[in-house]
Length: 262
Image 1 (cartoon, rainbow, N blue to C red):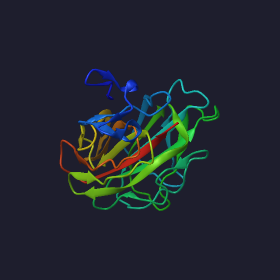
Image 2 (image 1 turned 60 degrees about the vertical axis):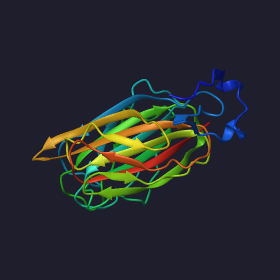
Image 3 (image 1 turned 135 degrees about the vertical axis):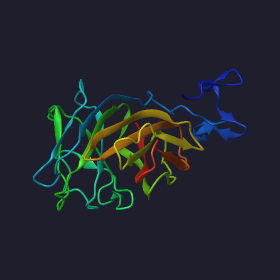
Image 4 (image 1 turned 90 degrees about the vertical axis):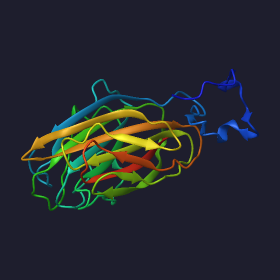
């Protein structure tokens, strides 16, 4: 939810607050400022695919379901969470997609879970699934969740900021990241276990909205859970940290990404 009025005055009619220009205000008393121009950014058509077992390597990809009703020109974000004991980077990026955290392993042997972020502007050639290759050296069973979602009113240069990540053997705190303008601030987490959700994410600067919580089920006592919460950002700002926890204590990884507004 964003600010609509301050002291009965509509946000659209306000030029500044206590001498601070409206364009420079990210939030007021903990409530987010609306995006500076154009239509609102919205997340829609969240689709998830879970794999409970099976190897994931360069010859064994996972087919992640695309959002239904997607149209050419839509911006699609794909988040892949896995329970990964091999502690290696994935073997590649699906054709036509860009990996937002390319070369950065969001996860470790401590978290025993990983997050990989991909995006693309759809052109109608994608089909109903996208094939995501696995790690170059991984032959161990992988519990995987693939989530695709459509985001509206995204800038042609879509990544405003990509934060570093945090790992831990239990609850973790995602480090702050500084956006370069209005956008959509997402906190992502993954947990080594199929029983970690619902997640709690608490940010001191923004009230986060639940995007999704899901698990990849459990097989042979193992699994993976993932979650996302988000907020709109009305101006360039530091997001502050986000404390993340699941309903069970286990290895966890979390980080921030900001999608730029058109």
